[in-house]
Image 1 (spheres, helix red, strand yellow):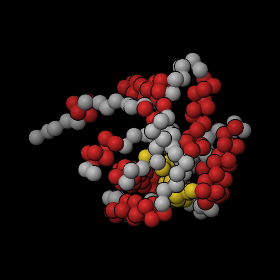
Image 2 (cartoon, rainbow, N blue to C red):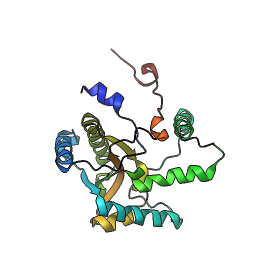
Image 3 (cartoon, rainbow, N blue to C red):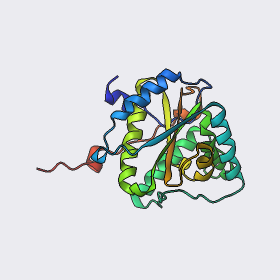
Image 4 (cartoon, rainbow, N blue to C red):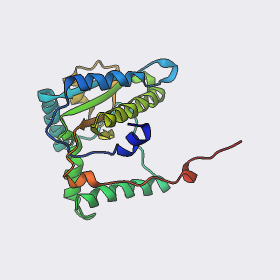
Length: 220
């Protein structure tokens, strides 16, 4: 599979089959991802791949925190209120997603329930948490983003689907406890992955991309 084919195949998948990925496949993908570039080759990613009973335990803890109405307490200041064209694109993506699920804009309860599925990992058999030492700040976040993109493309090459989730960095404490993370380590975001449920309406959602002229300038 070419890189462009992997890019076109990769979408944010939000419904998965109850079908774990073989351990040798997991190890192959995460070994290949070690080739990701990073600033000064510091390779700051500390990744936790959670499956099976441990994943279910984590899901229950996160849902309990969410249902109790606790406010997010992320390790990193990643929350931003989008403005202008960025807000328009955010709304467009949300509209595409909820339309695919048949959820009306006015149905706030259904939207909240759909949002809560982030913390059930969309029923994926596996979830990866991307962590790094907190002092690395924005430079570490850049490297983690490159690493996560590399992983998602490798997964596409292996026939796997994934969904990057900033939401999985919102409530770090239950994750920290279950994964036994040291205090100096922060959780940036997560990614649910596995085999896509091709019959699920939500997986038919497709967002648009801006034309080249809106994003890139060629200077000479």
